Structure formats: structure tokens, C-alpha cells
Image (cartoon, rainbow, N blue to C red; front, side, top):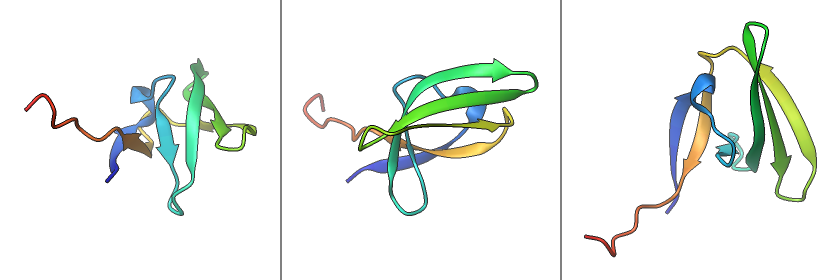
Length: 72
């Protein structure tokens, strides 16, 4: 099962996967400061590009890769 965690926009990195409330996934391709906000560019599963600008302290949902139990 996939785990979702809440992060502030300032903590996002390229390669992170955002998840919206309906379960759609968006892979982050670029994160940069724009004035007092942060511009996040992403691609959807079907390859469409998009972007949004948010406050650094805004909360987003990020998909966390399941932990491997092989090392345990």
C-alpha cells in the first residue's frame, strides 16, 4: 500500500509525486522561487504538463514509496 504524507511546498523536490484528493498523481519536474511564492511544474501520468504557484508554507500531499522490508 502506498503511503501519503503532508509536506510544505518549500520541502518539495524534483521527482516527488503529488497526489490530489481523487488519487491522481503528478510528478514534479521543476521547483523554483517566484517572488514570495514557489512555482511547481509537473507532468501528469498521460504526459500533460502543468504548473502552480503556492506559498512556501502551503501544505501538499506527496506519495511516499513503500518501505522495503528486505533490509529488516
